[in-house]
Image (cartoon, rainbow, N blue to C red; front, side, top):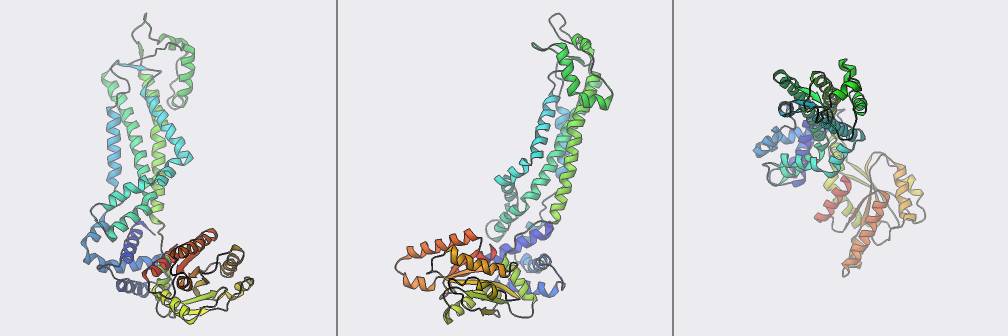
Length: 468
């Protein structure tokens, strides 16, 4: 989604989850049905979600003025770029690269420190570690969260702010990088301007001094370091005889050679190694930021997509259930239907396939190919110990039957709870075994008491499983 739409959808999602006095479940259903009716027939899920958010905010914004203020905030202002440009130029202009001695020290100018720092930054950026480090440690996300949380208090707006910080952190990182690049280029440009402005009113001279280096070594080093600047300006580094004459010694304590050629060479060096590369990087960062702002990935719970699909279709949601090792009783089927109806609608159609016996797992593939099912459920009992050889093969066959569809492993706790009512540790132990099984196989797994489908923890667990 684009940045604005993604922020609106994220905000509405936070209110959907809260279901407080400002936004009820009925409000959410109203917005979804209206979006399904007003969207184009071929609308994508992203367009449906955007349309639903638009309708939802028509009710939400009048109920809480803070929502409108939060949405009115901008994640980017061009004035920040102008500020970085102006501040960088002023800092560079104020930096005196030559100093009070009014002579350019050929061996230790601040120019080389600035160039070395920027070259180190280019190496880091080339390796891609700066952006990855920022994202992995979350400092960008924390800064963004602090900005978006300002003045929202607690509740859904705070949830939306934290979630939006997570979603927009990569975009913010790229934008911040662009501003940093512009600021760095401005600092170098200010330094160049400072060199020439000071040269207008001061008579600078060039010299060098060293305890260990001799003139040929100094000449060779400067010739290499200033090679790009020499090619650009056409100004050559003098030979070693001229360099020797510029050396400060007790016998020659004052610099006599004009610094003008060296100022040109150092200015060209700053332009070549700092100003131009930083501006190129800034342009690339802005291009990347523009692309990211148009296609931000927004996590959308599976249940939300299924509800939108349900509001668009004419018939009920079809759910296929494949029991394994133990056939479900009438109470289990009723409890399963009641639990799923909270997410898929009261008119859902539950289709229970034939029982798959232990050792006959290959037959599950033929039974699991029901066309049009929005959800397929592998139903097992908590009393069974999960085994990769049997249960693992069963869910593998089910997944292979319809790779594109959603598969949920539902572990019914009802009978096990009755049997070990006095030993809650056994329940926790067996539930942990099944959850470990789900993690090993990368499955959506839900442990629920189908004798009590109305338990809040059952619905919460179902939502977590569908949204995983």
